Length: 364
Image 1 (tube, rainbow, N blue to C red):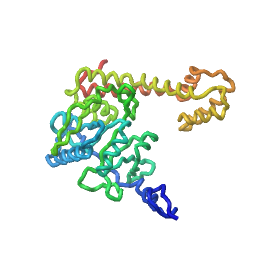
Image 2: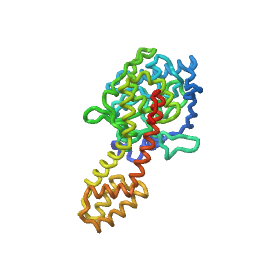
Image 3: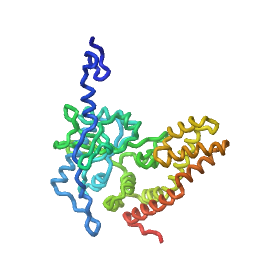
Image 4: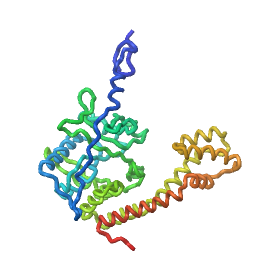
């Protein structure tokens, strides 16, 4: 007897569907690893060689294809990365290996619908399945991206059979950065949880492609922020090219942002631990407390799992456990003081490199 298939939506005898196997086969796909990028090499004076006319035309063609893919999108997106610097300066300062865009997670569904009409899907780097010679890409849905907090994302072009294309003349991969817009419109950066003011996520002009498509350009502050966080030598060289596009207010904002990094880390830690404590009650049965702590994610590594067991023993001796005491215990067990000291060193290093890139003298 034929029934409605829950896998493909068609009518056929139960168990006869092969679509699930097809979907499973396409879910994970393997490709050779990318070659190392060499376009960020600068000379002794910190200057790049401009790309050849042929390579410049290739970059322009990729931007034109991006414009076509995103044409008519009913949501906001921004061009990401150093390519913004080139467009703002009206010349390619160097080669650009890829094209990046950013959106907020509230627009993921709309993006997914937009790109599927153009023959693209969203993929995530499946590092646990990669080999020494091959990278693995997993086709993912907007729901999976949010639920699993996926970060290494791309838009990938597929053929009619759903296979990801890797060698066509069209733009096959577009790097995708997904952030979050909070209740007042500010943007929470996915990988750092830093909150950047909404004004920096307004488009900073538009680039018109050869076919007349318009691509929104990112604010220089956002470009500089990501460059500092990436931390490669050529990222700071990029900032050197960007500095005259930043106002004094912009520069002060960025320097303060990185100087305050250790303080923010401590605040985020304290807030997270408070949230965990709010879900437990020292009077709960031990197994229920253990379950709540495991749900919080605090037990993801061996140190965390050991903490849960130790904490349950502590409750026997301290049945009146309060929030402040819980925070102190977690801070000690996870050596937060040491971690914050490391963050201070890292923050100083970022600030020093940023000042050098901006041409600001470091204070003695």
